[in-house]
View (cartoon, rainbow, N blue to C red):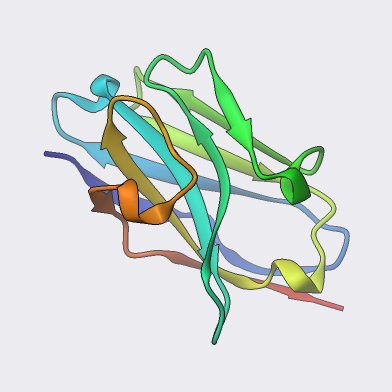
Length: 123
């Protein structure tokens, strides 16, 4: 089992950057693929990016490529999401999620979730 805690959200102006962190507890962190999702009010939970257990493979939603970067530091039990050139449409609650084995883009495939961190981008 793994527990996840997101941090790093906040208010930023359009064009700015934020780095979100997903800190995990549990001795088996390196067995989990991790993904980032986001959900705006009244909208579906959207896939952003995922990373495999070792950090050697990543996958991005097409709309996120080039602006968002996912990475992980297994020595720190942490996964990061670097977000650049932020837009007002990026405003949402951002979640990290974990599952054993391979990653998927479907949020229903993930077993463990953090509480989310709010990102607000002002125009």
